[in-house]
Length: 458
Ligand code: F0G
Image 1 (cartoon, rainbow, N blue to C red):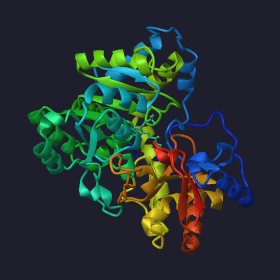
Image 2: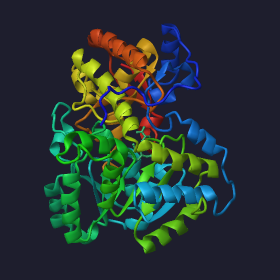
Image 3: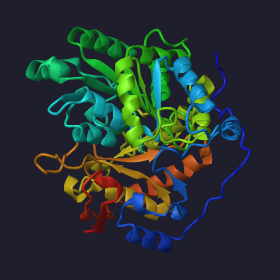
């Protein structure tokens, strides 16, 4: 049992110096970036909360592993170490490395989806839905209604509404639904977890209808922490055992190792079905590379294998989420409108409530992210109408219920003092919120527009 509070279970061996900027420099940088924080130069950023993806700090063990890269084209020993880690910690039979999560989503979508198929999911994720659509499928959101309400305190807002799934089965027939995509945790809902009880019910239901469950296990260890804290019967179970139990109710998984697994690049597709595995390992050669490296160097696979083991350590995950909760509590104490309960990988500010004078088409979350950067050099990200994109059939904007600014916390990178500075900046932007203007989109790319769109101030 752990009695002490959540100090980081590591000490710092090497540091990267941060650059401070002046308000005038930030104003200019923001104009050059078209008010899109994705288009800022990292050099001009003080504290970078754009994403927790690929931005975590590797351990000395992982760096040592990088020196053991076996850079053979085929059959690198690092691949076999990765395969062993996937079997040990996740229990899947077959694994194909990919350059990152979306590489796995592409292969999965192509081998599983036929034109006109229906793919349910517990809320969309940007790249996941796009690959489903490119493969000819149509995404349907089957997350519980509570997930769309930023102040609803339900502890498992990532749960699937099995009634919604049943309505899809009745309407389209189970044959049109090759699989349901289940994300742990649900990024776009604010890092919200799914419960094991819900996953078991979903397994029973899908077994009856011959529908597979594919896990988006990108933040599975963080989801396991919330199960340990909140779900009846799991208080004394280790994160590692909960993670393995989650995987055991699914047929396969896509993984962006850039999050939970503490590496700067990498991912995989895991499957239990031999035929599907063979199809996938043939296709991966076209898009990523041979099935024993999938777009990665041997050293990357070694760092991933080690990172997977570190990611399910109880002390690691407790400190990682402890830091997120620390920042969230500060913002709650300041009465800043954020998504509650606080999620696993970041704090999500409710921009509709923060800037009630702006219409959603004036891009409140995008405008707020820009304002926070201008205030302090803290870089955050829009997760609202810009990220949601347009309906590929009608061309209309999607208008998501949640219009959020994400303060994503990289793992093992920033200290508690950084969290204090971030909270101070949000507080000062909140004090001048009435003066914040909306934006107009002046450049819109065809795919995943949030990455490259440009705006001007209204
Ligand atoms: N699934 C989820 C839930 C994700 O959060 C991401 C990436 C992916 C899949 C795709 O993985 O980036 O390795 O290709 N999320 C990042 C983010 C980009 O900032 O939330 P990828």
